Length: 276
Image 1 (cartoon, rainbow, N blue to C red):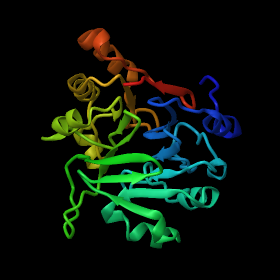
Image 2 (tube, one colour):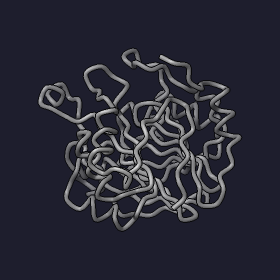
Image 3 (cartoon, rainbow, N blue to C red):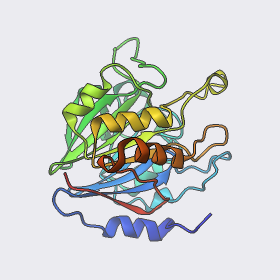
Image 4 (cartoon, rainbow, N blue to C red):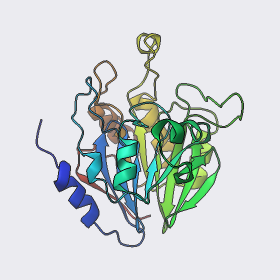
């Protein structure tokens, strides 16, 4: 595996980058984890940084180095998305960070992690949060089904569109396609889309490995929305739950040509989001 920026080098690169109005940058942390710089804010989305024994890619950052987090988004309460081991460490390193999670997780997480509940904000499908100069739009995720909380009716699996200055980035969380997703994304018109491609099958579901879109479904979702950039994710971390992102990129190239730009991410390398 080729060398990629990690540790203090990566943390310094993230802090040093200053976006122009209407521009944004992303850094991939592996699995479905990204750092987003947009407006004057830094957002960590699904950072999976604990030393899980089965992970194929070591953590790129020590949580103690995350001193710049304004917002931390956890799309759902699975370890590779809300990494309970590292969230208290991020909270200590970035004492002003706000943690955005699906509403059903808002009560248990502060209690379980020993964090101040006032640092948490809930997000539901169709809900909008204004935080740190950004607007966060909640978009339900179907992992493998839409799964509202039986008591509150609020979604337990979420995606989010983060918007500022006319630029917006959709992080889908873990999701399959469902009725209404295309309409919601067309209305929001994201500049960039970060979507999983690892797929699903009976063997994985039988061992409680809950699935996502296939690479074809993900490509066709992006093809219907036509953002300026689509980035495939969630294909790399665990044996038995992987996909070759080149199949996604080839499918996009053959089917959509120059009308849809895809980019296979590299660990820790900056991805510039094209202006709208």
